[in-house]
Amino acid sequence: MPDELRDEESYLAARAEQFAARMESEGVSRKKLLQLVGGALPLLVGGNRLAAAGPAAAQTSPGPPIRKPLPPEWFVPFGTNAETRWDSLAEVGYEVPNDRFFVRNHTATPMIDPDTWRLRVFGGGLKLRPGSGDSVEFSLRDLKRLRSKKLTAFIECAGNGRSFFASQQGTPASGTQWALGAVGVAEWRGVPLSDVLDRARITKDAVDVLPQGLDSNVLSGGVDMGKVRRPLPVAKALDDVLLAYEMNGAPLPPDHGFPVRLVVPGWVGIASIKWLGQIEVSTQPLFSPWNTTSYRMFGPDYPTDSPPLTNQPVKSALELARGAVLPLGRRTTLTGRAWSGSAPIRRVEVSTDRGATWAEAKIYGGNRPGAWTRWRFKFEPSKPGPSEIWTRATDEDGRTQPPSVSFNTFGYLYSAVVRHPIDVH
Ligand SMILES: Nc1nc2c(c(=O)[nH]1)N[C@H]1C(S)=C(S)[C@@H](COP(=O)(O)O)O[C@H]1N2
Ligand SMILES: [Mo]
Image (cartoon, rainbow, N blue to C red; front, side):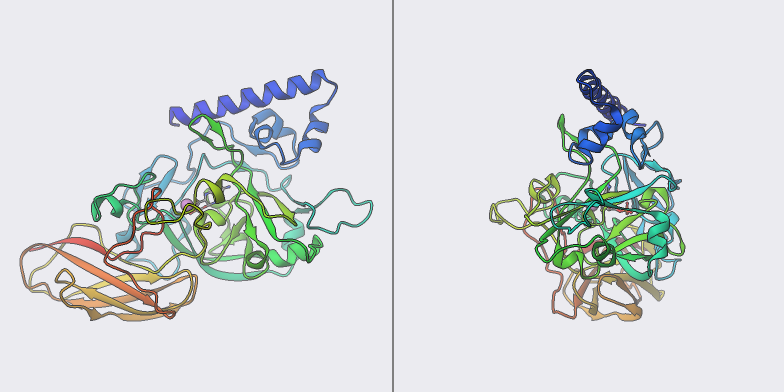
């Protein structure tokens, strides 16, 4: 485990211990303390011993930040994150298999006991039955008893493609230097969030919900940001959001949110909270670092009050290693995928002469909004040496990939045409 992480854990554990000890000296038992603060004092729940006293114990004990194997032919590792290599998708079908799916962890994958796990729904936007306490709890069995739904959707990090701000536009953006592999499509199965909120008796006055993960608190520059959580407007929450407990027909793997995660179709990945522990339902707008100081556009070309990010823009990628060697004078079939957070894909174009001319690729297979479509393109390289392949997708709403995009500090939503280097000989 990297030292930063170990430090983070011991720091959190120490802080939580200190706090619990102080409260105990004031006559508040640990159990009572946890009931009192619930999720409102996120610092506490990050501490190992306190968390263990809670109903949904998340073991943040020593372990690698990512649990699944990360073979180099499938992944590019980035500390607590791992990018899927696009060339490894050439061999696979519409969905990305769970063992190849990219991972984006703010801290580390927690190991959660599904038998003691509970989803706690609470807040002023619920009309709780008299005498039933201040929240509604669902066990995994409760959720599995509800009508389940399948949803094929991508999860894509807002920062997917960030490295191209540096390599194509000369303005490096801070954050994980992903190429295009921080995206994957899976078939999710679970319960519509709207059904769960209905059962929790959400009221017409509710405006925001705040799903929160059970992973360790996030420390940023020495500041404790609490648990990963990001408000979601009720309109989206009641529309097409899924509480997923299955991914491609298997229980969610630990790295992807076991036992239950949110899947928020079309939106930036941060909305799809993993290791879901609680959801606050509020009649007031809610805020967290993930919709205020990050996951919004900052930079010279953006207003200071630009809104929290929602839908992903349109993108395309080749199922080919960067710098791949293509045989001279021999016909090759280039394959790839294209996606948009808002609409199906209308067209994919390919340029093999650095944008001078474009030709249309053949789209095949599924093509749904919030997922992707696959495409192929026949190409016979006729000039030896280094070259580039450019791809450009357009969605049914007419959104397309521009030659460049305005810089933003955190390098979100890089949707410009990506220049894919090849070598012909
Ligand atoms: N609890 C929790 N949820 C989370 C995160 C996290 O660190 N903790 N990362 C988010 C981000 S930034 C992304 S891009 C997606 C990644 O999902 P994946 O790891 O299953 O690919 O999960 C989101 N949900
Ligand atoms: Mo992300």
